[in-house]
Image: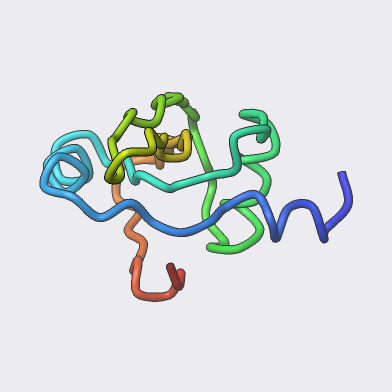
Length: 99
């Protein structure tokens, strides 16, 4: 894997109420990633960008909603989220990662 690819894997942090609860309870952080990214690429990208050790990566592919825009039907884009587990006692400032 080249470094250019690793810089493009993470699109930004996913900030939500559920993400905050998971971060506090299980020391997991949620990131939006490219839909074609693998778990190994996500792990290496987080370790490179944030300088932390990653224990595990879980991914979720969320299908985009079908919406009506006037007369024409449309569809929102699919997104992929990565739940990254860090070792106990490790903290990350998500302000460092721009969305």
